[in-house]
Amino acid sequence: MAGFAIETVGLAKGYGRTQALQPTSLSVPMGAVFALVGHNGAGKTTLIKLLMNILQPSAGSATVLGENSTGLTGEAFTRIGYVSENQELPEWMTVRQYLDYLQPFYPEWDDADLVRVLDLPLDRKLKHLSRGMLMKAALASVLAFRPSLIVLDEPFSGLDPLVRDELIEALLEEVEVDTAAERTAPTTILISSHDLAEIESFATHVGYLHQGKLVFAEEMATLIARFREVTVTLGDGAASDAAAPASWVLLETAPSVARFVHSQADTEPVEEQIAAVFPQAVGVEMEPMTLRTIFLALARSGRGPVDMAALEERRNKRTQKTDKSDKADRSRA
Ligand SMILES: Nc1ncnc2c1ncn2[C@@H]1O[C@H](COP(=O)(O)OP(=O)(O)OP(=O)(O)O)[C@@H](O)[C@H]1O
Image (cartoon, rainbow, N blue to C red; front, side, top):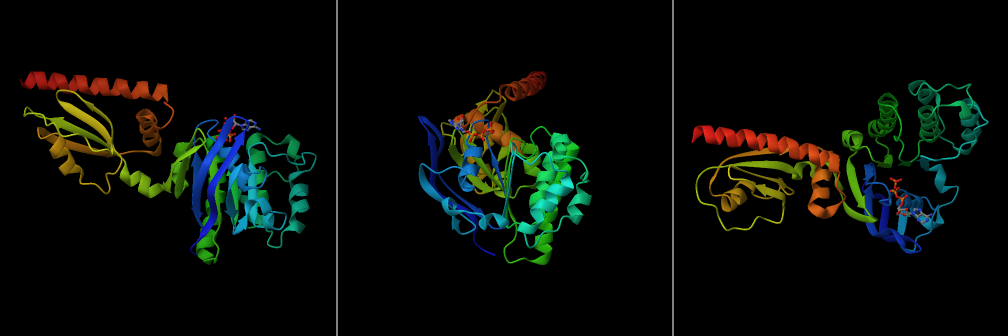
């Protein structure tokens, strides 16, 4: 079904002088798995709390499943499953008691498969569960009522890879069941996370928040298609005065090689651009990038914070490579 599960227009939140979320206009399509990423303090939790009517906006508005976020009440939350990292649960209850307590509120409740798939210890009290188990119980408690919208704030932080995979599998099963049953309103997932590798493996859309500003929001496939790491091998001819296109990021040139990140490689004529800027080019290599390396490039190009350790590692690799190719050049000369 066409349409948006979430739409915000100029949605903003300030705390005193801290602008936690700058005016943000965002659309999350129905059926999307939309990942909200960004460093600590970027505004992810603030945005999610505004959408869940836990915080009131300083400006702008949001529509969630067709309702204004500030009007979301109990009835709307039978269609929205929200799990946050620091959620308070009735910890004196066992897992079974907790699920049984929730069931009467939701007509479509069914936890049998989830309890099995997530291997939940039904007789254990919530207060005796490990962090991973608690997260699994919280996830089961929202998946069981088949919500139209699932909102997860940092569900993976501090979990071991095995538990993460189980959580993702349970989530994806929810989306796949929907696709198979061709529900008119498929489940939409909004998830905030720091874990770029994990997010890349299953999100359909990604939104990048940096210091309260939404830098971009787009389909994962488009983002991955438009970024390429380009290496141009340079021959002996004369250099050109042509300026590099604006879509080239982090251009570095050495006598025998030039490197840059192309941010529009799927739509611009890359080879023609290279021929204009580097008429002495004798070879071009274009490598796809991971979500992590794309973010690193954006950070280094001044559009976000810099991950110094990773930067150093890349610099070292580059220096080694350049040294090798310079040596090869010298031995050929
Ligand atoms: N209650 C509050 N009072 C004042 N400032 C706040 C409050 N809550 C959040 N902030 C500030 O708003 C900004 C955004 O915080 P937020 O928790 O939304 O970021 P985040 O992206 O979720 O971070 P993290 O990844 O660390 O959870 C930060 O600068 C934070 O210090």
